[in-house]
Image (tube, rainbow, N blue to C red; front, side, top):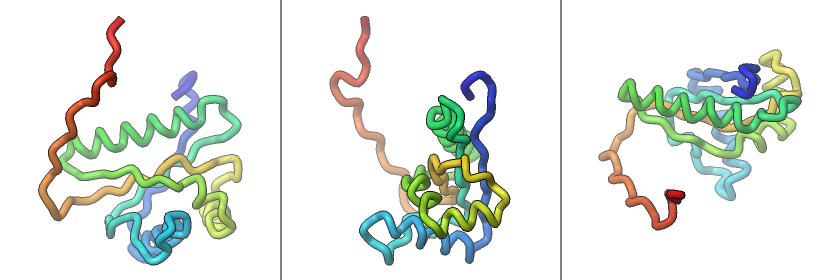
Length: 135
């Protein structure tokens, strides 16, 4: 993290009822309020970061990337689910943060869902032209 501040925190959720509540909260911002943006995953790690730090977005994003790389190395599937910021700007999300004892200066960066896929692993897309620029 920027200057080693470790400004991000992780909230690990494995309670099925709470995951469903969080998924419903996330779905409010998708245009499909009846959908399950967490895809039935048994574990959700919510990454929040201290918004008073200049590098809070970068710090939280690095945590998300590291979580996903670590999961892959252990044979666990993961997916970054957006709308964490919207979830915890919502009154219901603010109430959850308060219940969990998390200061309101923390903002949502991402939701990392963990589990095991029920389908084949997709083939990666080829790198698009101009993705890497050599100088």
